[in-house]
Amino acid sequence: MSGHSHWATIKHKKGAIDAKRGKLFSKLSRAIIIAARHGGGDPETNLKLRYAIDKARQVSMPKDNIERAVKRGTGELEGLTFEEVTYEGYGPGGVAILVEVLTDNRNRTASEIRKIFERSGGKMGGAGCVGYLFERKGLFSIDGQATDEDTLLSIALDAGADDMKRAGSTFDVTCDPSVFSQVQEALQKKGLTPTVAEISQLPKAPVDVDAEIGRKVLRLMEALDDQDDVQNVYSNINISEEMVAGV
Image (cartoon, one colour):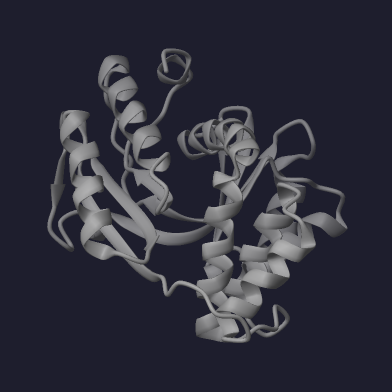
């Protein structure tokens, strides 16, 4: 399993807990609101909205909640105004951290994110300090026992994917975000269900750190992810099973 898959698995487990608290639904609603505001309320023509709704459905978010969020985004219902902000910084060992948030109060959120960095042995940096180390990509992780490499490569490339790599027990398929939906549909038509399917910020050159530093980075990422305004957290470390076991 790749480092990205490890972090996605941690998020999935935590998401089940967050869903019980309503926190996960709140975060997903914000993503739907922003997508609908910028691209309209039709998921057939607004790929960002379609992606946000698909993520909400995956965790059984009620249909009424989804429809209400879309209407808030299109202005049919009143609600708070959220803005997208990306914070950048350094974790333990100097690793790069990207934090994507949707907030109705930029000053409050920046202050809280900074405190989380500092409490965890990291430091928030200025805009652009680490962003250049990442690239936005669609990512699918498929169990290596579900298919063979040549078959999956053919399906992925025909659907418009950029690349496929073996990562431990899984295959990682990457694509441009604009073709995410068509790659996802191509996999589904062949009966392949990815363990991870998301649009992510992938490190251009992942770095190796020792297990202790890795565990500290993961604790920082979890603390950031637990902040109400945070949508996504990314780092440029290779996450190992040893690191995950210690968190």
